[in-house]
Amino acid sequence: MGARKRLAAEANKEARKSTYIASLNNCPTSPRKMRYVADMVRGMEVEKALHVLRNSTTYSSLRIRKLLLSAIANWQSKNEGARIEQSHLYIKEISVDSGRILKRIRPAPQGRAHRIRKRSNHVTLILDSRPVEQKTEA
Image (tube, rainbow, N blue to C red; front, top):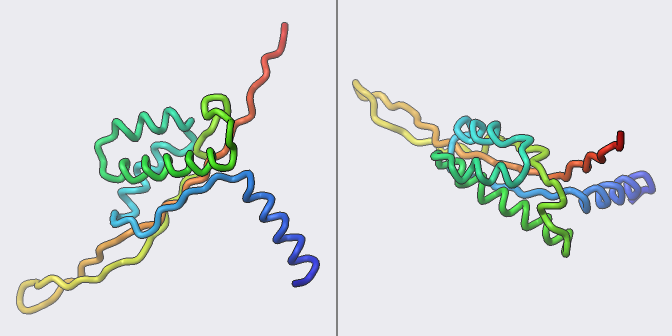
């Protein structure tokens, strides 16, 4: 490995220590339905997002809530002894990408066949902590 590649790898390794990621692969829901819920919680504080997802009625909200809890657990494993309430965690980035598509055939009139696409998706969630705003004395 060359020096430039080694330095880049070490920089990426250091950056990964301070990022808290959780991912969900091949979730059997269409990406369009999942993006609706992802857009709803993007940029929210973690506690508020958990409340919103708990009270949402869509099936996708259950999956994203579980993924958010996994990201919080990843944060706790890297920051032992720290409290979530004092860290000001928020959802920095949440992306929904298309996953594998199962292709099925359905009979159609006059001997034809129509294709059915059963879509799935991949969700990636990244947490970060907001800097604490210091109050200025007047």
